[in-house]
Image (cartoon, rainbow, N blue to C red; front, side, top):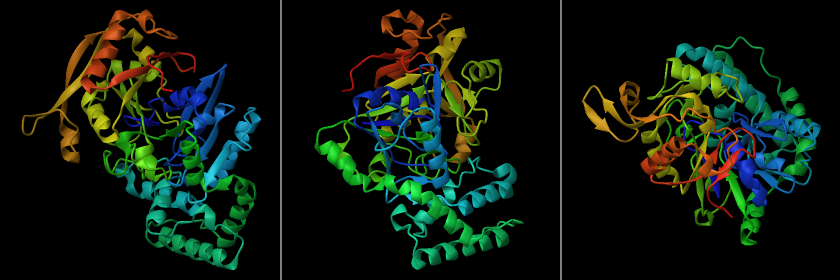
Length: 429
């Protein structure tokens, strides 16, 4: 089973993974790094996870950081320590792929320097070094956990990389320093690896053994479909494959082992950072969604841009991910709105063409106008409702209209941030 973000991230995947993880033996992250932010609330506690899968909060579940990830060793250890302080033991439950790539300090320096240089044309990265680390992976210069060892050969590689990156920072990106010392980078990495090494193993084999033993495995996506490096709103995307196909390449699991893809979708639309957003609201309704929905990024703290539900965007997401089930989140945020809108198609004012899909060309994305279908708001509380037939009739109508437009069964509805504030419409196991 794959749980994937269907929009631009921040859909509430962490809560759903935490909820479903009770029934699985293994939860696997397969892409991205600590640019993700999954928030889980239960028992009056709030956990924000950036690297470790949300399933770690279920005491019997083991968690994997897959080969498709890029991992900052210091950030990983900080998250481990935070969990230990909160009473969550990760020993014997957390595993890191020996083939995952490492984020090093120069990756973060390059990320920040590029954004500074780009000025108003910046992409809006988290400055965590994710993109530069994936670049080194693609150019075969990246460092994988399996090759980290205290040997002259590995030390020589660190020396060369730090020297090359310092030159790039100074002479191409115009950085004034301070620059890194190769010896310090090497020593810090060795210290971090003393604690991380017990977690490192061949995770692809572990996952295969679980599946072969007929145990349930859940693959947890980070970010969202339209931040995918191939299928997203390029260049305003992340540097990995956030779509369902990435679960296979990022974990070493064959495609024919996947039996369900749950697309998590917010009851409206949000986006962090730059890039096209056809249904974005710059009015009192947008302010309402931002305020009531507490729309601030769990990783960056940046305010999220808010807008109406975009069915055209979601139809593309259903197609590219092969979504079999929908999980709707933040329904309760809409409780106070008299009128709701769903974008059913776009109009290109340059050609007067009607579009029922999200086009690839950036210039069209930026100028197209959303055409809306209006629905009456229910104007009554849905917070904490756990039975479908106890929802207001107009809320049910809104949910069912979304499912109808997307052609996918609505299998789960979230009515609040806590684990128990959920309506399950089917059994997944």
